[in-house]
Length: 142
Image (cartoon, rainbow, N blue to C red; front, side, top):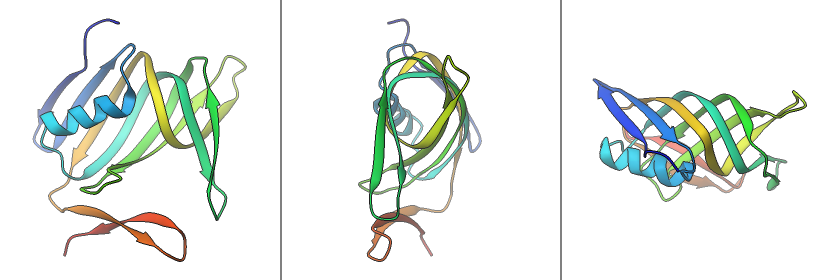
């Protein structure tokens, strides 16, 4: 493993570079702690991930798939909320066969890096379970 994540802020923008071998969600949690992010949006991220689990919601539950090999992170976005389920992240990743897999990201290891832009929100976001959908949905403070 190389250096650890680097993060800088400018107004409401937070720039992050994750380093090889870092646990994606543990490092993202650390970024939120260091940068005092309670709610906001992951505007985009690029880089590569390995040992990731991704899934899609079939209307009742998440159907998950694990991938060990490194994949190029071609798109990522998500939300950050002041809730037990802090992150809701979607990603599209391309493999060596140039096929893209995508959906809700559950876990991942950075390899070799991820570059990310986060937009901090001045409005507090929370999540509440919607009994109709079964999902922990985003709600905004009034």
